[in-house]
Amino acid sequence: MAIFSTLKLVAAKKPNFVSPVQARRNKLSTRLWEQIELARAQRTGTLFAPTRTRTIRDDDGNTRTVERSRRVKQWWFVSQRD
Image (cartoon, rainbow, N blue to C red):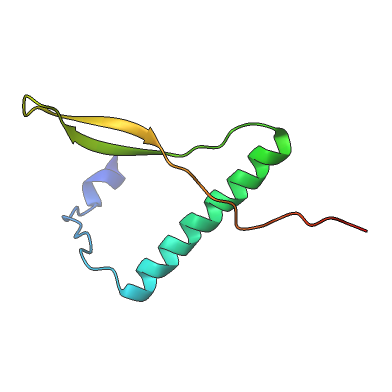
């Protein structure tokens, strides 16, 4: 417990700016992960449908969050072998 008394705690500052290059890299890596998961699901014969949370306002003006599945298009095709 003596080690805890010597530690100094400070408030961490979360960066609120992401460079455009890093944002594109993050977007590409997410899409590549989706393609890998889609290929694994097709190989095993299961369904891969990532969910997205949406905020919907009903007729009374109340807002609620709903999970909806996203459609992922495959980036590859299978050709016929001769």
